[in-house]
Length: 267
Image (cartoon, rainbow, N blue to C red; front, side):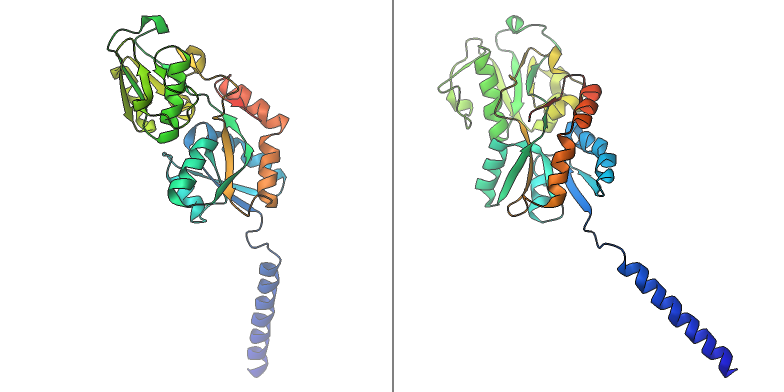
């Protein structure tokens, strides 16, 4: 009986030792990268990058958020390692207002901001008093006003002012009613108004293509989307691998085929 008991104990001990060896042999999360993004186009582009990152030995986890606040919040809280959804003026404004230290490490893909309408086919058709919706967050507000200025719809005191507000409009020849709302609601309400300036990611999400818009940002716009991380993590090997994958010819081809020109590489 003692021999049997001893044999059972020895077997359990060996099994326990074997399990410990297996656990020790596994890396403890060193090859996992978590990235926050808005759904379209950045979330979808990142999902396309998952198998390419896997080939590099890194598990890419994509966390999707439907607003412009949470991706930076979770990055600051270190719940994710990076985010892709914003442009540099937006990031600068966020850091200034929140006392955060988020930095951009590379450019990414950009869906250009554009003026859309279900009612009008050309800018010249805009009627007196028509309502135009634009985003109410500071940088996209200025960005929208600059687009309207460059297309002769309104005139700003300074057409290059990246913090322009409605108070900076000095001419509005058609007495347009310019209404500011949250960016995620603009495309949803497009049918209710004369026209709307819609940020690219929300345009893509709602099936809108800038080729069919009344006016679109130029390709040299400073409002290109970026990959952002907390300061100090710029040289993280996982981040550098993500940049390499997103900038690869293979990834560019995937994006071009998927979005047919509505999303462009801006690096």
